[in-house]
Amino acid sequence: MSELNKLTLHEARNGLKNKDFSAVDLTKSYIQACEKYKKLNAFITETHEIALKQARESDKVLSGKGRPGLLEGIPIGIKDLFCTKGTLTTAASKMLGNFIPPYESTVTANLFARGAVMIGKTSMDEFAMGSANITSHYGNVINPWKRSGDNKDLVPGGSSGGSASAVSAFMCAGALGSDTGGSIRQPCAFTGIVGMKPTYGRCSRWGMVAYASSLDQAGVMARSVQDSAIMLESIAGFDEKDSTSANIPVPHWEKEIKTDVKGLRIGIPREYNVKSLPEDIKALWEKGTMWLKDAGAEIVEISLPNTEYALPTYYIIAPAEASSNLARYDGVRYGHRTTNDIASIDDMYEKTRAEGFGAEVKTRIMMGTYVLSHGYYDAYYKKAQKVRRLIAEDFRKVFEKVDAILTPTTPIAPFPIGERTDDPVSMYINDLLVVPASLAGLPAMSVPAGLNSEGLPLGLQIIGNAFDEQTVFNIGSAIEEAADFKATPEGF
Amino acid sequence: MSQIDEKTLTKIAKLARIRMTASELSDSAVQLSRIFDWIEQLQKVDTEGVEEMSGVGNRVMRMRTDEVTSGDEREAVLANAPQKAFDCFVVPKVIE
Image (tube, rainbow over all chains, first blue to last red; front, top):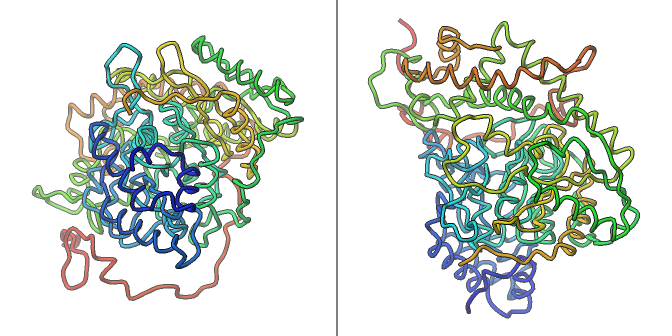
């Protein structure tokens, strides 16, 4: 059977249910795609043997020996920062290059309990620090999309770049990602797929390699809005083991999706119309606004006055939390340990960490240590925490007047590997429009909505109120319907 | 302007327990100074009387009952240890 890997997740699920093909057939089709597109370097570890074993189990369940789960027999890519029991989990760092978790993350445990098949562990920026997937210890991930008439390799975005490339190139039906400052939405926009970051607290962080704990949130990446709802429903839920997990029931998002947006109030924040926004992205944003207006939504111009401060705020808070979280990598209990001569335990720590961390991770640990150090704590860290409050308050006030917010996902289209690396700030700008929702902990989605003049995908972002993922799914699916985005990367 | 000199960075690298060569330190000084020049714009924001925000959602930590929930996992705990002996992690000598 050919091209089963081109089905959307829900089409594949129907096919399995109707016995048009087996879970093993479906899995083999994805394994073939993985073999064929190895050059994209989307996976750190391929788990094809495990996948086939899980698929055989699913086939038994699907043949009537048990109740099929939401994702029964569906091959999924897993970002390599979710601990998977017995399978290498590196966070794309040399520091964890030999780490075999003795336990399963809650999110992947939920996924497997719903019958999902693990096709492999996807690459990412090292410790999720990056927005172009060029900081992985395992090499750059390549975007399957190319500019028309130009063969240069483009970045897939980051930090969940491996997951994004894998879904976009049909190497899995969907993938798990994680979002600290846009790491799901931004790569999804760059690769023409749907990405959903739920409200902070929806998904357990237990067993997820930590970057910045007050921001880290697991989420999903897929080829349709409906697929993303199925996946999120499969991984979300309260977990005793995460103190910030929200103890509220998980709705049936997929079943409840309505594309009818009549009467919904959609906020258009003027501050997101930044000076550097290219014309084609601006035009797409206007088009998206018109689609919703034509479908009966009420368009409301809104202001989120502290938007411009979100990115610098993020670059204090995230590194501060990272410097504390990554203090655990000491070469004692797990992970890399220096084999050079050592004179003392401090010498061992310092050499281990110098060897184990890559350049971007070191920079962020240094930034974080600096803003938390004596004499700078108030000026930087406390200040950023106060500005974060102002940013969250901006959203809170706006959500008294609107049901959701529509913006572009990124201020740029995917760019060639190697560009924007001279100045760290020019790389950070990729996340300009996705960081504010992360700071406020709000659910947000990127949905592919069109191509730019170079034939590259562009995404629109929908930001919802806390725990109102349903409205985000609904608007996302209305835009999906209006945009009728059918483009796929050439040659895949 | 927030010029971060190499002396400050040497101290920060020590606090972060990352060994850095002289050239790494000077590269890092240039890079961090650039980033902090950009971050400096936050000082413009009036945050008088604003409460710091350390996280989203539950402000009060949930308590759990004080009971043992797992144990006897010695093998799993030590499985990834770079160096171990007698069921313990091995580190360089820390007391004279």
